[in-house]
Image (cartoon, rainbow, N blue to C red; front, side):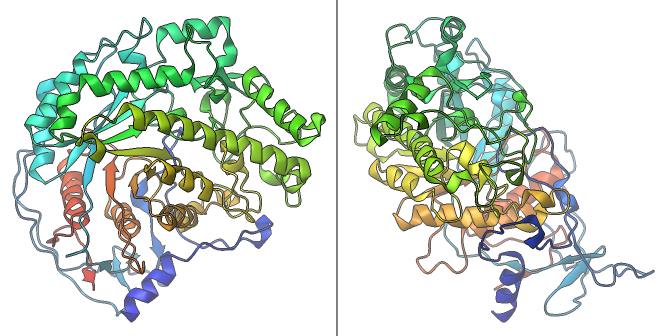
Amino acid sequence: MALQQSFNLMIRPPPSSSSSTMASQVVVGRSQSLFLASSKFDFRLPYSVRKLKCDFANSATRALVRDTGESVEDHHPIAGDNDSSSPDGISSTNINDYNQVVDGELRLPERDFTGTAYVPIYVMLPLGVINMECELVNPDDLINHLKILKSIKVDGVMVDCWWGIVEAHVPQQYNWNGYKRLFQIVRDLDLKLQVVMSFHECGGNVGDDVHIPLPQWVTEIGCGNPDIFFTDRDGRRNHECLTWGIDKERVLRGRTALEVYFDYMRSFRVEFDEFFEDGAISDIEIGLGPCGELRYPSYPAKHGWKYPGIGAFQCHDKYLMKSLKKAAEVRGHTFWGKGPDNAGSYNSRPHETRFFCDGGDYDGYYGRFFLNWYSQILVDHGDRVLSLANLAFEGTAIAAKVTIYKKLSGIHWWYKTASHAAELTAGFYNPCNRDGYAPIASMLKKHDTSLNFTCVELRTLDQHEDFPEALADPEGLVWQVLNAAWDVSIAVASENALPCYDREGYNKILENAKPLSNPDGRHLSAFTYLRLSPVLMEKHNFVEFERFVKRMHGEPVSDSTGSLGEVH
């Protein structure tokens, strides 16, 4: 136990207090790979190069120390792999009780998850599994891959039901044909379905290999009324999703945005009634913003944003500005009815702006007014859409058991500054002196809705070498969000932000999925892996993934890939 406690203190420190300046931030020397919190970035450094550098790394002779490994049993057929033999066993030597070294890399023992809680594992299907004509693409290949996933006891798959495909041409004319065939295949293989109501555009983000725009008829409306889209201070429109300012405005061929979302969800519920009745559909995730996440589109790559820019406020369409002006009038300060003019630009750093710098306007009278309004718009949108979602998916006793999820992005850069600027522009009012996630958790609790949160595979120590100025703290953010949800007793599921194939990333997911020191025995309700791909199906990657699935299920594992043993 002493060893395990030492391990936790080294790599999983509790969230540190915010640093007021970059100079006060301690940077831990560690070779790293950068893994960003959400799926909208245009770069990724190799995940597998993470290293804790040994004290004797400069020695002319480097010790080669490996752990005992047993052959992995029950290998499963993998596309392009004709060799079903197990990898060779690997000999081991212990260096000391606290660390071991493999190829000059310091490693620490793993936890043993045998007998721990069963966390269901789902795998996201490829984005292009359904084409723009709502036809299933390459069904034979898909069936083969699903059979392989089933053979290692994956619980189910996740699929996006794209608004831009189903209601593409004419309002309230829905084409579900391709999804019907897909769902039948999944059900016949005795896999469960997580289904996403995707009201956003697909394309332009890391991992997006297809482009799925919003429905054509919506785009046509936008040509005549561009204020239906989120807008920044410079007047640039973002076509990823509709502004929340039109939730109650009848600007979509006589319907409000809320009515459009409800009609779509209700059509799905009726069309796939049999899949609800027999329990094939286990979860419904409701898209509430860009990339399906409840946030403003504050850091769009198409507008030049690059990590770790703070992003920009997205409230300058005429509908949200009308709401802001009304709120200012109610407060008695009509001159507050405009967005900040000193908040920098997409790629600014907090200290470069008068709004986000230490002691900046974000914490002044106007700043607190604006941020309260801006974040409340986000909460109110989630509240309204989830109310309608619960209405759309009610109707049978089985349907009542379907879990409705809301996805929340992990904005972890600038988390160790006072203002948390990147979170503020995204709509999370979470500076160092305020809990911005508690109101969201309370809103979810009201609707008996679960939370799906990203970035559980990210390590704080891995964020400093290439971007020390970002003052990121993904572990602190995860800790805060998980506890905000668990404090109000709502379930939390999660997914990885970007593709993950190595053991270190899987171990971090496991640590967050089943916290060692949680006194209430809290754990994730489900985990969804991003995503099914040819890379995942490569033999060495798939063997590692199979091991991860077993550990998430609480099953014992045998080790053939150089693991250094598990610690109880």
